[in-house]
Image (tube, rainbow, N blue to C red; front, side):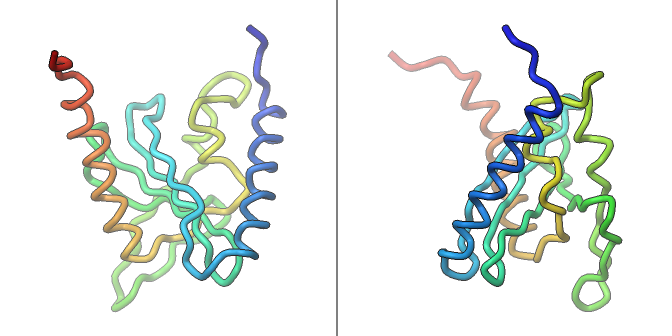
Length: 151
């Protein structure tokens, strides 16, 4: 098996982003391009939403515990935490520590969590949807995956 380098991961990430930019220019407003559900090496769960906003792709990242609950937003290191509507603070966490786990900076979750693009604070609808699908996939899904197959 050949070794995958950080440069290889960066090429895949850049290629995916270029395709999403093209798709966003052609898509209707608020079209979902991708939803990726991941379990990280730290046994957290992550949902990465790539959506069209103003004919451009943007990404929102939500992170939960191992069961997909206690979901909170994650943003890129270069983006400061923003104030949400009605003075609520958008709970955020920096992505950089999660994106590189191995010695060469490559991990199973590095493609979805890396840059490009910068990750933005999610709107309330994405928080609600992410909370719902993460608990379904990582809590309820664990039960479904471990139950015996009926004959």
